[in-house]
Image (cartoon, rainbow, N blue to C red; front, side, top):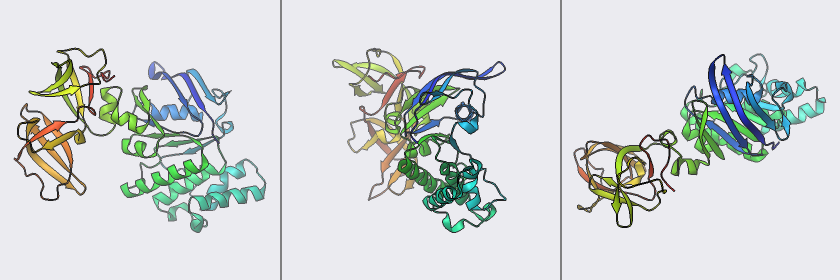
Length: 361
């Protein structure tokens, strides 16, 4: 249950319309690997190529050392969980879970043992005699997951499995999915457009745009050091400000309208006078009570969210930025308040003017 997946130079097109031009990726044995990107970026298309549901116009797909390009989907030993559950409405929960095992003509005692195991693992044993229409969305998704896992697949493929659930159920189910995947150690490829969901469940994430992988990394790496502006804006929230690099002592700094933020981690491609895109996460602005430090702005409105308060601040330059601060015990800054803010220079990201490349070393 821990197969490595290798994809070399995958090509997918419909007629002259190229969906995936040239994609290569290695997914480690037992890894929870997520394909993340906006609608139409090719992530579901790639998943269906791995499953055998879509044709492959070019490239090589491997499970371990076995090339699977021409292998029938039924012989790939995959478990599949879909967005719409795809469980059989006329079969009870228990019969749904047992379906794949019966299809493989396993001995009755093996079918019974496996079915019981995954009914218990997914905490749906008490519903085993119910039909799907008497289950909630979360319960139906547990049935779908139990059915996919009961056959002991080499690879588990999941296509937007939580998008039909409400917010609270999504959080609950992503914890269930991650816990079960950890327990079984099964190689999992997960598709979603929800970056928070991807960060919560994944060992590594591939961020895709227009059929091209923009960056692969851990959730922490993608959030803290995105490879380009697309990744920076797609993973989490950020303020993008066009600035210039200026000389500061022996190095360079980003000029925030007279307030200079020294940058000690720029690559050799960064030069004085260069126009750059500065990506500053909301928590990387720090409101200060020192009147002569930082960049000045005016609070346009605030949103109290318990632990944190979100502010929308208009800078003297006219730019608007979002700031997240730990909620103050005394009061929230009122609309119209003038504030000064410093910037955590070691945490911000600097990109070329066109956003295609990071200038962080």
